[in-house]
Image (cartoon, rainbow, N blue to C red; front, side):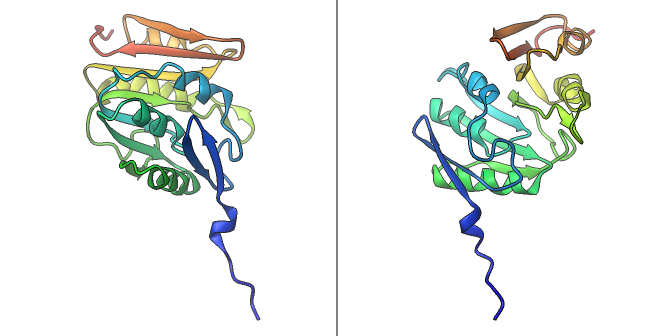
Length: 193
């Protein structure tokens, strides 16, 4: 007799700030909430409203926590990892929150503009530091932001995104910085060079 595959035995549940986060193997921070995401979440307030794009959504933790802070958001979560998309769907469902979950390589399957783009982007490819994804998220964000729209990303502090932001926005700022992580922020209302 062949053994039966029981998908549910691979789902890991983690409670963070009274939110049920669901992950499956192959998803970033499978069994814990990573420090970078925690730092980005610490910047969320109930004043954030509108259409939100979560790039590299992983388990969906950023979107879920943002929705818990503000019920005036419409969520779109994108990732290239099928396991991440499944995890995000499970996390949304377990918290009774709705959102569009799409397979997309950064903006490849995105066709609208947003009030806020958030991301804890991947920094490695095949175990080597690779900043191409971070650069693409920042550089092309202006095409996907509404007027006065904001981009807010978190990266390891040893990675500088100043050049990427300077080449895209006239003004940007470091919203928050700790020993290991930095949050960058910029608005579309700034003139684009």
